[in-house]
Image (cartoon, rainbow, N blue to C red; front, side, top):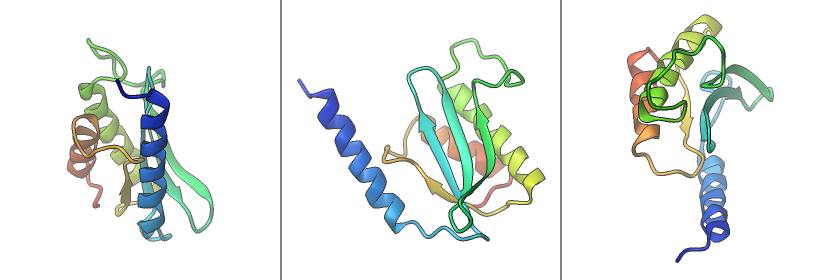
Length: 122
């Protein structure tokens, strides 16, 4: 059996390693996707200024309801559309995806694909 703490520490190390390699600029801010036990969150961060430009979560009241839960794959797809829409309003079209050390599969892939369809360029 794998120790959950060790598994999380490995994920956090991967996240820091990937984040160090990402080149985030004012023209191309960082799109961060995060999963919790109950919700999904995404934010676009300008690291040069240290400012969050766009923030969206499945916890918001105006977020569309889903039959499964607020952390399902369909919720991740909807979150990608919402983030892309808010990014357009904020004037952001190009981003760098920060997957927080998680594998590009499942919810993260669904989120990224719907954000691309919404008009964001990675």
